[in-house]
Length: 120
Image (tube, one colour):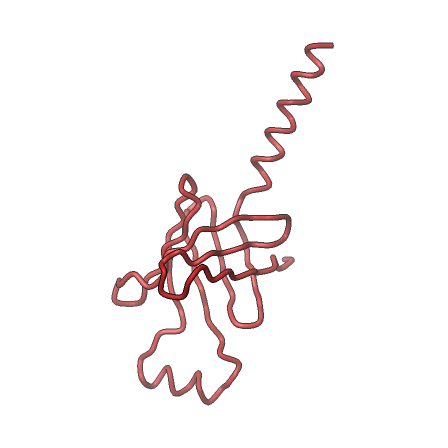
């Protein structure tokens, strides 16, 4: 009986750990995030929803795409622009098929961004 309880507890811990893996493509109306948990990298692509504004921003060399690193121990993602300047540092949490990002930089308060995982 004790072995059965031990096995069940072990499986529950294993399943809980697997559920927190941030891997794949997540989207909402304004942005797409692609994360590779094994390589500990992520990329955000913004879409303003306005083709003219997107085109103008590209002409002004305003970057709508940011590359980042995933710190699995601290549960954070740090994104940088093309020049390597740190633009955003966010904590993350995976809940089912949702990825929740929280901007803790203080510039925009505790902004929360919710993204839904896209099926392959």
